[in-house]
Length: 268
Length: 109
Length: 155
Image (cartoon, rainbow over all chains, first blue to last red; front, side, top):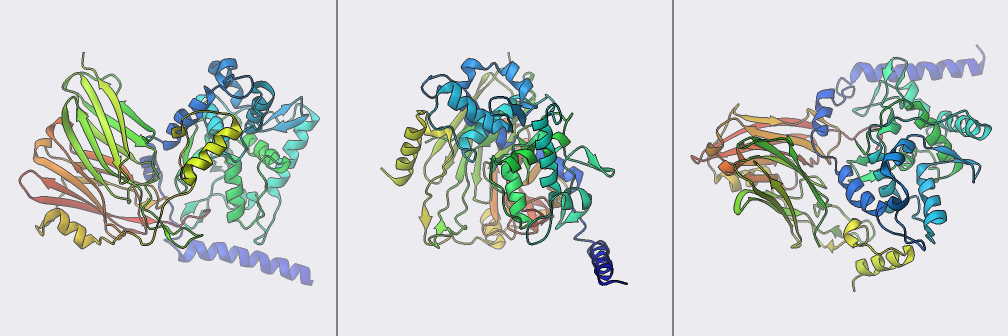
């Protein structure tokens, strides 16, 4: 057998045995939190909801910038909530796909006359995003992935970023969220990010982000979660709002197309 | 400086003498005092809600004592028997003397 | 003006907004201390509550907690004592391996209607959660449950 063939076979066997060994010896390691126990978390009030209403909601109604207008003065919540699920979305002015967070920045700059819109990593921008997703709860995720060449480019690029192996451990998003989906990693179940994959039920992640991260005691956006995931997987973290991140957000959100928005979510 | 809090009553359509569930959340870091600050090597000082009091009308009906072991942005849920129309007041106090109050009216018609 | 106020003022000036600082959570400098608070181990916490009196296991104390907690920062715990409210004076929730084994103590009055408390606690590691009911006749009954706390796979 040629060397390459030998290495591939060895690699495949090592991988198989690693998974096999894990399944065999660690009865404990294979355990993960049960559905009933997860339900215990849902019975309370999600602190993210307080954040959405008290911080985001107040900002939404606060006059800002040279115009001294609030978001609420132009936007009716009834109409706005129908649009939330279509983001990330193509923007004609910029001839690019942008996230809802970036659209908020655009609105602040162009329509409210705010000199310095809230940065993407700021609590204010997160609060406004959370409020918008919160009022849109009940609507469906419905992002366009193909209506024009720019959108198609972003979608394909996002899929590419999702599947690209990077970093020290040579992992891609796909490694855990598709290939290893259904398996347990340190007592936590790995889930697909869409409706389902290979018969394993997915979380339709985009429908319940931004989420209140219990381990951080604060609401985190989906792009920030991507960064935290990348960091954990020993990949170089992509900047918020970069083309790669927005493309990735578009792709992951498209996986949840049709799912009902329920935000902010309650997540680990 | 009072903190942000939310109080919800369940069910919304209760009658006189029903047992109603009061769900509360207050935004508070609940620092235990055990976490080290990386830069200085010192500890982030304990900063958490120590007392919660529930008043129904003029009467104090529940008293709670909390430690830093309660999760951040604490969720606390308890029951009240809706015997009379009166305000239900929840008071949270932390170890720095901060007081937050939230009042919700109980109406039994 | 302390550093917290100065930074907040600067941030508000830059953004041209003037809203109450209660809108944003404290993100700036926190107070530091030289030493952590003193330890209160389970035995000491138990003595504090019962004064050395015996505590018997009872199935009248219903303790609901997950078998495996998804993370140690937020563990849902619910305690209900299945006795008339007039008979129950207080519920104490303890976590036997925490630095301070006492987490929450709730004193009821008949106005509560039900001896019930539900909350979220922190568990430093896998340990037992103990719910002690202090009864009006001066006796103590309890229930306990081991809860596994995981590191988690992805942060």
